[in-house]
Length: 274
Image (cartoon, rainbow, N blue to C red; front, side, top):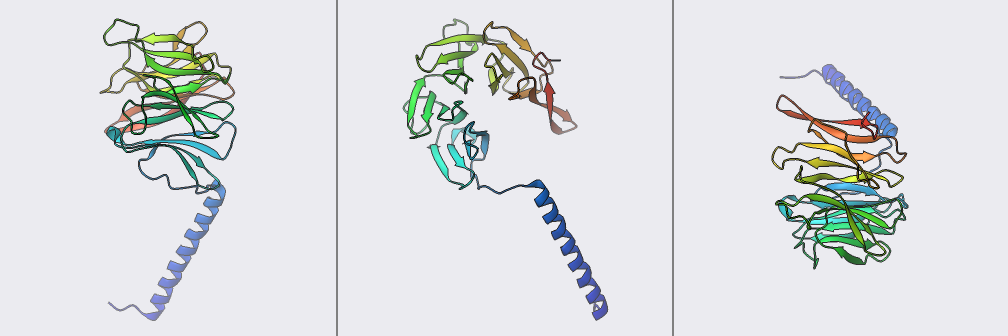
């Protein structure tokens, strides 16, 4: 089929106009969004990103492949895209779970048997020289509290005779290395997404995973001084809670089924569940 020169010119004008419109739309929205490309994060994909509390250019990145085949934890400089590697293991699992309030130390939880580590459990990284110190065995995700010397971490209640042993939360004074168990439960199989603390360091918020196969979970708060636990959700679909830096609100993720699709949404609640 032949196209006349007039029709051809009209078609070119339409295509040119469409391209110009697309470019204008792209420029308009890229400017409005203010998005800046930083770096390629590679494979495995990151599971957590945590800003340094003292250096606005540094992000702690943790990335673990399925089945423990590969693990990376590194500090990403957002201005230069430089990666300072803390863990680069061909097998095992590792999680950079949080910065100290002064930004000088990082809590690092490592699975037993991870390449390059003599022991699993809780390690602390000195950011200034990247030296690492093993702190305690059999510890999961850890969190620095606002006082700068206390670490809250997941563990199991190894003093218990129950089988399976209850999962627990303990506090450690990093200077003295003294630790105490402040919460223990056998109603769940795991802490599903770590935990977050209130700005005053008195409360923790976390989610409990009830079953590894169907993955139901709910959100709880814990008063670390009294040991009182408050269940905020009761639907078995809530996880990943984070306390607001200003204190009065908690945000969490909620999932539900719509047909064959799983829909995720964010919800906000007061710390008392209202």
